[in-house]
Length: 302
Image (cartoon, rainbow, N blue to C red):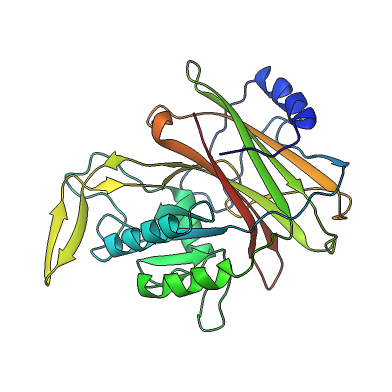
């Protein structure tokens, strides 16, 4: 991915990041969300300043596909998501979140894709069944909850979101990865291209996702249910770097020209293949009425 973050600012933060080492620890599975991270006081804090106002980025769409290896209709959802990504290259970004009763591993599974944070998202976004997808976390008027159940409805909802061509806030994403130590430094940067009400809270979320994982998946065809042993799972949520409902982007205002930089450091877990792994970051508004995503970007780990 081409990174448009101003280098005179980015280099300063990456230099600081390369000199530091931080391990992230998740709360135990039986704790309640938002599963806070244990961070040292000087890490994952915002840096903010004013800069030249940028032109608005093209707005992208995040599709959070809730799925499971025991869900026989979920492969159709995977195919729908793949088609949407291919038809709208660079503008539609997908992630598969394994959660719900049908997400537990099959008896012959080599891996489990279930995360406690995925279960928290399942509840947060109002998933009623699988497959379901949150599309930019917009609560569409014809839906009871944010998550849209049934992949047949996803394309129309994504196309509706694609009509919004300009992002209200720009998001830049960059990283440094050391393949020897597996230390990963992630830099997210918000650039406000227009003035936004300061009372509206903005939060940044960062996902680590992995593709090309070969593991069984249950499916159905012609009324028969069977297991595909060598099914390829893609864009699987493998780790959440931030709180389940995002990390607050602190700034004194949201005036045009305002920049907010937030950095995250972690050690990439040994069970994740960095060669098939990428980072998804997004910024959303958080109010009593809306969790809508304002912009989303992705980049490879290496």
